[in-house]
Length: 264
Length: 264
Image 1 (spheres, helix red, strand yellow):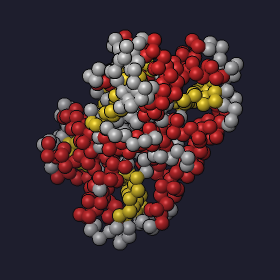
Image 2: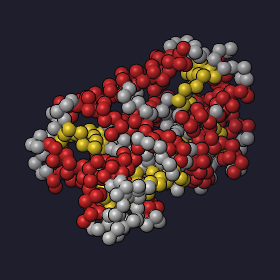
Image 3: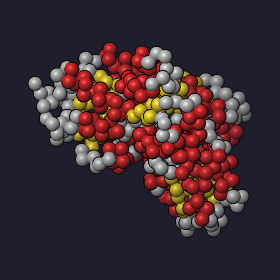
């Protein structure tokens, strides 16, 4: 059996392209329909109710393209809307929180786990809840890093001031001697080098983009939803604001030019 | 004649409260209905079309409260949507760009004018156009400072790193020896001290919140729309996202507690 239907991915904006990048690596034959809710970005400081409402709209948009599975690439949306989305729709829906939590647990041994993300992601407690399931005995130290999103979008990914801001944000995690650090926001992989350097070699960074791509592959295989194509998957990108800025920023996140970008 | 109808003010979020603060100082008897579009904030990196759409929705909301005049407190919205709003509605509509430009021209003598704001405000060229009308011979040097919004919202208003970021952003304006500097974003007055310190004593900062309050008073007087009340004006605040965070942040912008905040 070969299921040629595309995978749907949504994010609050451009950050979810880090998930697309990993998805292409893990599942190069799959077509992808991406929706970036750029008219409403960012989600990270908005309320749970508002994020739930936007998330439902995003799923409804993707369903129009006959997607076989939906990935919620946005950590904030995964943290607050995933249970609601799964209750509301039949299509399999994968979030980034549980795959990230599992990976962090695997990498941490008996050490503490660090978590950084937006305010809403951190205050939702979703990662703590997921970690309690997979690693009930491990201690979690979390810290919201709201400026990281703006710094990544501003392109200050290796800027001296970004390093100083990282130093300030990450100090409590470093002091707590965490063994792994979950990058709980799709923008943060862009600051990977800065965060890595600040935390030091002993700390493993968990990029949820990688974990969610692996998780998606497992689910598609289990449910016989994989395409038989081994390569050549196409990507189409839709956004709720105008496509130009998304295409410009997107190149930085995807690591290559975005060919097809349209206003939804 | 005394017109007791309220003044309507909208902004993309919480920044417009700097305008409310000045409005209360200049027109303490006037009632104010404020709408903060917190579900869509920030406007600063979004497209013109999307900002126009949001701005029309915001005016429609305020009109339900029988407002006698509307102030577009958001610089981004004033820069890209004001002509459309004036064509579309009968109610008098005041933006922040022209009052700010006039004040800057008055303060600059024969010197250069500096302008900082969001990406969309700067790239719209609205301030340059307004300045061309009021001071056709003065040279304008502009610089987008997108991180300032996040820094203000993060509460890092006098943080060491904010000073360093300001130093970097403002360097070209300082080098150009501008005589005045327009704070072309409602969030920037929160960073007043940092910006002032960086630019030096010789540079006059133009806070559009002050100018727009004066402009509003002039228009209301001209059209006989002033209330006869000398004090005791009430303020009601509505937001499109949940009210809690707005009320919390709002205190910092308004300089006092917000009594009435509701979801629109």
